[in-house]
Length: 325
Image (tube, rainbow, N blue to C red; front, side):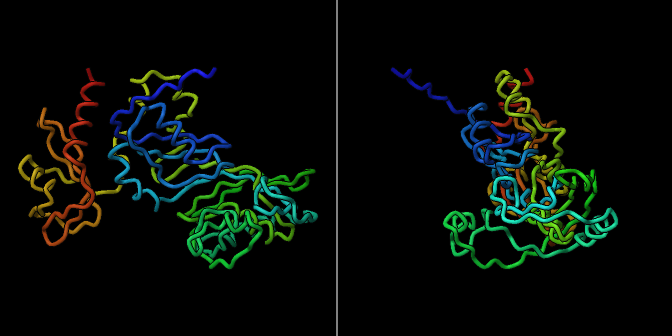
Protein backbone atom coordinates (compact mmCIF):
# COMPACT_ATOMS: atom_id res chain seq x y z
CA UNK A 1 0.00 0.00 0.00
CA UNK A 2 1.39 3.38 -0.99
CA UNK A 3 1.99 5.92 1.76
CA UNK A 4 -0.10 9.10 1.42
CA UNK A 5 1.72 11.99 -0.25
CA UNK A 6 2.70 14.83 2.03
CA UNK A 7 1.11 18.07 0.91
CA UNK A 8 3.62 20.92 0.77
CA UNK A 9 2.45 24.01 2.62
CA UNK A 10 3.17 26.86 0.18
CA UNK A 11 4.29 30.27 1.42
CA UNK A 12 5.15 33.71 0.04
CA UNK A 13 8.69 33.74 -1.36
CA UNK A 14 10.12 36.77 -3.18
CA UNK A 15 13.50 36.93 -4.92
CA UNK A 16 15.76 35.46 -7.57
CA UNK A 17 17.54 32.13 -7.41
CA UNK A 18 20.52 31.65 -9.72
CA UNK A 19 20.31 27.96 -10.50
CA UNK A 20 23.03 25.87 -12.12
CA UNK A 21 20.64 23.71 -14.15
CA UNK A 22 21.79 20.12 -14.57
CA UNK A 23 21.82 18.14 -17.80
CA UNK A 24 18.70 16.16 -18.56
CA UNK A 25 16.12 18.48 -16.99
CA UNK A 26 13.99 20.96 -18.88
CA UNK A 27 13.93 24.51 -17.53
CA UNK A 28 10.39 23.95 -16.23
CA UNK A 29 11.33 20.70 -14.48
CA UNK A 30 14.23 22.48 -12.75
CA UNK A 31 11.92 25.35 -11.82
CA UNK A 32 9.32 23.02 -10.29
CA UNK A 33 11.98 21.23 -8.20
CA UNK A 34 13.31 24.54 -6.86
CA UNK A 35 9.78 25.81 -6.26
CA UNK A 36 8.99 22.67 -4.23
CA UNK A 37 12.17 22.99 -2.17
CA UNK A 38 11.41 26.63 -1.36
CA UNK A 39 7.69 25.90 -0.83
CA UNK A 40 7.03 28.95 -3.00
CA UNK A 41 3.54 29.99 -4.04
CA UNK A 42 4.55 31.53 -7.37
CA UNK A 43 7.57 31.05 -9.65
CA UNK A 44 8.80 31.51 -13.21
CA UNK A 45 12.02 31.47 -15.21
CA UNK A 46 13.68 34.01 -17.49
CA UNK A 47 13.86 31.99 -20.70
CA UNK A 48 14.50 28.34 -21.38
CA UNK A 49 17.67 26.29 -21.41
CA UNK A 50 17.59 23.01 -23.37
CA UNK A 51 17.58 19.71 -21.41
CA UNK A 52 20.95 18.90 -23.05
CA UNK A 53 22.41 22.18 -21.79
CA UNK A 54 23.57 22.95 -18.26
CA UNK A 55 24.40 26.25 -16.64
CA UNK A 56 23.02 29.41 -15.12
CA UNK A 57 19.23 29.75 -15.16
CA UNK A 58 17.75 32.66 -13.17
CA UNK A 59 14.51 31.62 -11.44
CA UNK A 60 12.05 34.24 -10.23
CA UNK A 61 9.82 33.83 -7.19
CA UNK A 62 6.83 35.85 -6.06
CA UNK A 63 6.99 39.52 -7.01
CA UNK A 64 10.20 38.91 -8.99
CA UNK A 65 8.09 37.22 -11.70
CA UNK A 66 6.75 40.69 -12.60
CA UNK A 67 10.20 41.59 -13.93
CA UNK A 68 11.32 38.28 -15.45
CA UNK A 69 10.51 39.51 -18.98
CA UNK A 70 13.18 42.21 -18.63
CA UNK A 71 15.87 39.53 -18.64
CA UNK A 72 14.78 37.85 -21.87
CA UNK A 73 16.71 40.44 -23.89
CA UNK A 74 19.98 39.83 -22.02
CA UNK A 75 23.14 38.71 -23.81
CA UNK A 76 24.31 35.17 -23.11
CA UNK A 77 27.71 33.42 -22.90
CA UNK A 78 28.00 29.71 -23.70
CA UNK A 79 30.80 27.17 -23.70
CA UNK A 80 30.25 24.45 -26.27
CA UNK A 81 32.01 21.54 -27.97
CA UNK A 82 31.36 20.85 -31.65
CA UNK A 83 32.01 17.34 -32.96
CA UNK A 84 33.28 17.83 -36.51
CA UNK A 85 32.66 15.44 -39.41
CA UNK A 86 29.23 14.22 -38.28
CA UNK A 87 25.83 15.84 -38.84
CA UNK A 88 22.74 14.79 -36.90
CA UNK A 89 19.03 15.36 -37.40
CA UNK A 90 18.85 17.68 -34.36
CA UNK A 91 22.31 19.32 -34.65
CA UNK A 92 23.17 17.82 -31.26
CA UNK A 93 24.01 14.43 -29.76
CA UNK A 94 20.35 13.47 -29.32
CA UNK A 95 19.65 13.20 -33.05
CA UNK A 96 20.27 10.47 -35.59
CA UNK A 97 23.43 10.63 -37.70
CA UNK A 98 22.47 11.83 -41.18
CA UNK A 99 25.87 12.53 -42.71
CA UNK A 100 29.56 11.79 -42.09
CA UNK A 101 32.51 13.42 -43.84
CA UNK A 102 36.29 13.50 -43.35
CA UNK A 103 37.73 16.45 -41.44
CA UNK A 104 40.45 18.00 -43.59
CA UNK A 105 40.44 21.63 -42.46
CA UNK A 106 43.54 23.41 -41.16
CA UNK A 107 44.01 25.61 -38.11
CA UNK A 108 44.09 28.66 -40.39
CA UNK A 109 40.78 27.69 -41.96
CA UNK A 110 39.18 27.26 -38.54
CA UNK A 111 40.30 30.74 -37.46
CA UNK A 112 39.08 32.27 -40.73
CA UNK A 113 35.67 30.57 -40.47
CA UNK A 114 35.16 31.62 -36.85
CA UNK A 115 35.91 35.23 -37.85
CA UNK A 116 33.26 34.92 -40.55
CA UNK A 117 30.58 34.26 -37.94
CA UNK A 118 31.36 37.34 -35.86
CA UNK A 119 28.95 40.29 -35.78
CA UNK A 120 25.39 40.32 -37.12
CA UNK A 121 24.45 37.05 -38.82
CA UNK A 122 21.26 35.41 -40.05
CA UNK A 123 20.23 32.07 -38.56
CA UNK A 124 17.51 29.71 -39.70
CA UNK A 125 15.93 28.38 -36.47
CA UNK A 126 16.30 24.59 -36.06
CA UNK A 127 13.25 22.37 -36.45
CA UNK A 128 13.91 20.97 -32.99
CA UNK A 129 13.14 24.22 -31.15
CA UNK A 130 10.26 25.74 -29.19
CA UNK A 131 9.79 28.57 -31.70
CA UNK A 132 6.22 28.58 -32.98
CA UNK A 133 4.88 28.67 -36.54
CA UNK A 134 1.12 28.97 -37.08
CA UNK A 135 0.59 28.42 -33.37
CA UNK A 136 2.53 25.16 -33.23
CA UNK A 137 6.05 24.62 -31.87
CA UNK A 138 8.62 23.64 -34.48
CA UNK A 139 9.63 20.56 -32.50
CA UNK A 140 6.04 19.31 -32.80
CA UNK A 141 6.30 19.42 -36.61
CA UNK A 142 9.70 17.69 -36.38
CA UNK A 143 8.25 14.99 -34.12
CA UNK A 144 5.64 14.31 -36.83
CA UNK A 145 8.36 14.03 -39.46
CA UNK A 146 7.53 17.40 -41.05
CA UNK A 147 9.89 20.15 -42.09
CA UNK A 148 8.37 23.62 -42.44
CA UNK A 149 9.71 26.84 -43.91
CA UNK A 150 11.45 29.06 -41.34
CA UNK A 151 12.41 32.66 -41.85
CA UNK A 152 16.03 33.59 -41.00
CA UNK A 153 16.49 35.59 -37.82
CA UNK A 154 19.14 38.25 -37.30
CA UNK A 155 21.29 37.66 -34.21
CA UNK A 156 24.59 39.11 -33.03
CA UNK A 157 27.73 37.14 -32.18
CA UNK A 158 29.82 39.51 -30.06
CA UNK A 159 32.77 37.14 -29.64
CA UNK A 160 33.83 33.58 -30.40
CA UNK A 161 36.82 32.37 -28.40
CA UNK A 162 38.55 29.17 -29.48
CA UNK A 163 39.21 27.27 -26.25
CA UNK A 164 40.53 24.02 -27.71
CA UNK A 165 40.93 22.32 -31.09
CA UNK A 166 41.48 18.61 -31.81
CA UNK A 167 41.51 18.36 -35.61
CA UNK A 168 43.62 15.19 -35.79
CA UNK A 169 41.77 13.20 -33.14
CA UNK A 170 39.69 10.14 -33.93
CA UNK A 171 36.66 12.28 -33.02
CA UNK A 172 37.73 15.82 -34.11
CA UNK A 173 36.30 18.67 -32.01
CA UNK A 174 36.28 22.42 -31.51
CA UNK A 175 35.66 23.86 -28.05
CA UNK A 176 34.31 27.42 -28.13
CA UNK A 177 33.14 30.20 -25.84
CA UNK A 178 30.41 32.24 -27.54
CA UNK A 179 29.14 35.64 -26.37
CA UNK A 180 25.90 36.31 -28.23
CA UNK A 181 22.62 38.19 -28.31
CA UNK A 182 19.26 36.80 -27.26
CA UNK A 183 17.67 34.34 -29.67
CA UNK A 184 20.96 32.79 -30.81
CA UNK A 185 20.79 29.05 -31.40
CA UNK A 186 24.18 27.60 -30.49
CA UNK A 187 23.22 24.27 -32.09
CA UNK A 188 22.64 26.08 -35.38
CA UNK A 189 25.88 28.03 -34.98
CA UNK A 190 27.87 24.83 -34.40
CA UNK A 191 26.23 23.14 -37.38
CA UNK A 192 26.85 26.17 -39.62
CA UNK A 193 30.52 26.38 -38.56
CA UNK A 194 30.91 22.69 -39.45
CA UNK A 195 29.34 23.29 -42.87
CA UNK A 196 31.61 26.28 -43.51
CA UNK A 197 34.60 24.02 -42.75
CA UNK A 198 33.33 21.52 -45.33
CA UNK A 199 32.89 18.62 -42.93
CA UNK A 200 29.67 19.28 -41.02
CA UNK A 201 29.29 19.05 -37.27
CA UNK A 202 26.98 18.85 -34.27
CA UNK A 203 27.07 19.86 -30.60
CA UNK A 204 28.14 17.30 -28.03
CA UNK A 205 28.28 19.68 -25.03
CA UNK A 206 26.66 23.00 -24.15
CA UNK A 207 26.90 25.03 -20.95
CA UNK A 208 25.60 28.55 -20.33
CA UNK A 209 28.20 30.31 -18.20
CA UNK A 210 26.61 33.77 -18.12
CA UNK A 211 23.32 35.48 -18.83
CA UNK A 212 23.14 39.25 -18.51
CA UNK A 213 24.93 40.24 -15.27
CA UNK A 214 24.70 36.72 -13.82
CA UNK A 215 27.59 34.24 -13.92
CA UNK A 216 27.47 30.52 -13.32
CA UNK A 217 30.00 30.97 -10.49
CA UNK A 218 27.16 32.66 -8.55
CA UNK A 219 24.73 29.81 -9.22
CA UNK A 220 23.70 26.95 -6.96
CA UNK A 221 22.84 23.36 -7.90
CA UNK A 222 19.57 21.61 -7.04
CA UNK A 223 21.51 19.09 -4.94
CA UNK A 224 23.10 21.87 -2.92
CA UNK A 225 19.71 23.57 -2.49
CA UNK A 226 18.15 20.30 -1.32
CA UNK A 227 20.89 19.85 1.29
CA UNK A 228 20.18 23.26 2.85
CA UNK A 229 17.90 24.14 5.72
CA UNK A 230 14.84 26.24 4.92
CA UNK A 231 16.47 29.41 6.24
CA UNK A 232 19.61 28.75 4.17
CA UNK A 233 17.45 28.33 1.04
CA UNK A 234 15.85 31.69 1.75
CA UNK A 235 19.28 33.26 2.16
CA UNK A 236 20.32 31.82 -1.22
CA UNK A 237 17.78 34.10 -2.90
CA UNK A 238 18.94 37.39 -4.37
CA UNK A 239 16.78 40.52 -3.96
CA UNK A 240 14.40 41.35 -6.80
CA UNK A 241 16.36 44.44 -7.79
CA UNK A 242 19.18 42.29 -9.24
CA UNK A 243 16.86 41.96 -12.27
CA UNK A 244 16.94 45.75 -12.68
CA UNK A 245 20.65 46.19 -13.38
CA UNK A 246 21.10 49.19 -15.63
CA UNK A 247 17.97 50.93 -14.36
CA UNK A 248 18.31 54.47 -13.02
CA UNK A 249 17.55 54.52 -9.29
CA UNK A 250 14.96 56.99 -7.98
CA UNK A 251 14.10 57.12 -4.26
CA UNK A 252 10.82 58.72 -3.16
CA UNK A 253 9.64 59.92 0.25
CA UNK A 254 6.70 58.18 1.93
CA UNK A 255 4.02 60.52 0.52
CA UNK A 256 5.22 60.33 -3.08
CA UNK A 257 5.78 56.56 -2.76
CA UNK A 258 2.18 56.04 -1.66
CA UNK A 259 0.83 58.15 -4.51
CA UNK A 260 2.95 56.33 -7.10
CA UNK A 261 1.76 52.93 -5.81
CA UNK A 262 -1.77 54.24 -6.44
CA UNK A 263 -0.81 54.86 -10.07
CA UNK A 264 -0.47 58.66 -9.78
CA UNK A 265 2.37 60.28 -11.73
CA UNK A 266 4.87 62.26 -9.69
CA UNK A 267 6.63 65.45 -10.76
CA UNK A 268 10.32 66.17 -10.19
CA UNK A 269 13.52 67.37 -11.84
CA UNK A 270 14.35 63.98 -13.35
CA UNK A 271 15.97 63.74 -16.78
CA UNK A 272 14.23 61.54 -19.33
CA UNK A 273 14.99 57.88 -18.61
CA UNK A 274 13.42 54.81 -20.21
CA UNK A 275 14.31 52.42 -17.39
CA UNK A 276 13.93 53.50 -13.76
CA UNK A 277 13.91 51.43 -10.55
CA UNK A 278 11.83 53.18 -7.90
CA UNK A 279 12.43 52.81 -4.16
CA UNK A 280 10.59 54.16 -1.15
CA UNK A 281 11.12 54.16 2.64
CA UNK A 282 10.35 51.06 4.68
CA UNK A 283 7.29 51.71 6.91
CA UNK A 284 9.04 49.97 9.83
CA UNK A 285 12.36 51.76 9.37
CA UNK A 286 12.28 54.92 7.17
CA UNK A 287 16.10 54.93 7.04
CA UNK A 288 15.90 51.77 4.90
CA UNK A 289 14.50 51.68 1.37
CA UNK A 290 12.40 49.03 -0.35
CA UNK A 291 11.77 48.41 -4.04
CA UNK A 292 8.42 49.74 -5.28
CA UNK A 293 8.75 48.77 -8.94
CA UNK A 294 9.76 50.14 -12.32
CA UNK A 295 8.90 53.36 -14.10
CA UNK A 296 10.14 55.77 -16.75
CA UNK A 297 10.65 59.51 -16.61
CA UNK A 298 9.52 61.93 -19.29
CA UNK A 299 9.07 65.67 -19.21
CA UNK A 300 9.79 65.82 -15.48
CA UNK A 301 7.21 63.18 -14.66
CA UNK A 302 7.77 59.78 -13.06
CA UNK A 303 5.37 57.36 -14.76
CA UNK A 304 4.78 53.97 -13.16
CA UNK A 305 5.50 50.72 -15.04
CA UNK A 306 5.35 47.38 -13.16
CA UNK A 307 4.69 47.99 -9.46
CA UNK A 308 4.80 45.72 -6.46
CA UNK A 309 1.58 45.47 -4.48
CA UNK A 310 1.48 46.71 -0.88
CA UNK A 311 1.07 43.05 0.14
CA UNK A 312 4.22 42.07 -1.79
CA UNK A 313 6.18 44.90 -0.17
CA UNK A 314 5.04 43.98 3.34
CA UNK A 315 5.84 40.29 2.80
CA UNK A 316 9.34 41.18 1.54
CA UNK A 317 9.92 43.37 4.61
CA UNK A 318 8.61 40.63 6.93
CA UNK A 319 10.89 38.01 5.33
CA UNK A 320 13.90 40.35 5.54
CA UNK A 321 13.25 41.08 9.22
CA UNK A 322 12.69 37.38 10.01
CA UNK A 323 16.05 36.40 8.55
CA UNK A 324 17.85 39.36 10.12
CA UNK A 325 16.70 38.35 13.59
